Image (cartoon, rainbow, N blue to C red; front, side, top):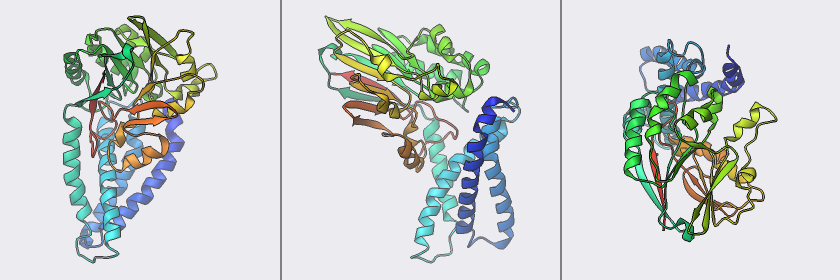
Length: 365
C-alpha cells in the first residue's frame, strides 16, 4: 500500500460508514412501492455501488490505476448520481409525511434525468465570465484571466481538452493569467506531459501559478513543471509591476496542505505580501478561500481562490460552505475582497448541477 493510500484510509473508513447509512436510507425510502422480486437485486447493486466509492478513490492513487480505471470511473459516476438521488429522496421522505402515493421510487427517475443534464453541463466548454472591478489608477484597463481546478487527468480532461481552453483564453488577450491550484489529478509522470499546451498561453505581461491540495496529494514537482512551461510560480513570494510610477503587486502562496510535509514547509500570505515598497494595489493568489483568515499584518485588496468548485453538484455546496467562507463569487472578508472560482474542470463525477465550469476574466475600470 502506497503512502498516499495509507494517508486516506482512515478518513475513507469513516466516510464510507456514513455513506452506508445514507445508502440504506435511500433504499428504505424508495423501495416501498417496488415489486418484491426487484428488492434483493437492487439491494445487492447498492451494496456494490457503496463499496465502489472508497475502492475507486483508493485505486485512483494506486499502482493498479490504469488496470482498474473502470472501477474508478464507475465510482466517480456513482458519487455524483448518489448525491443527486439523495437530494430527491429527502424531498420524498418529507413528502411522504403529508401525501401518500404509490410512486416512492420517483427519486431514481428524477436523478437519472438530472444526471444526464449534469453530465452535459460538465462536458460543455467552460463559460467565459467577465467581472468589472473598480480600482486605483494603476489598475485602469488591466485584465487578468483566472483558471482554477482544471484537474487534468480526470476523465475527459486531457491534453486536447486543455489545448482548446488555451486557445479560448488567448483570444481574450489578457494582461495576466493566473492558475490557482488543483491543476492536475493523476501520477506526475503520467499527467505532467498532458500539461504541454499551457506553454502556449500568451498573456501580454505574465502568467502565474500557485499549487492546490491535489498537487501535494499526487506528489511530484509540479512547480518545476510549470516553470518549464513559462509560468512564474509564486511560493510565498510576489512580483511588483510599475505602471506610470504606480505599483501593482501580485503575490501567491502554496496550498495550506503543504504544512503536512514538515516543519520547514509553510503557506504564508503575510510573507508573500510583505514588502518595503509602497504598493497601490495587491492581489493574492491562493487555492482555498479560507486562506484569507491567515492574513495577519499585510493589506490585500483582492484574493483570487478556487478549490470549492462552487459545490459542483448540489447539495454538496451546503457541505463546502461549512469549511469555506465563500463557495462562489465575491465576498468581502476582514477588508479583503475574496473571489471563489467555480473551477474550469471538475473533480470525480463528470457532472455539474446548479454550477458551471468557468474561465473568469477580470477587467479593472
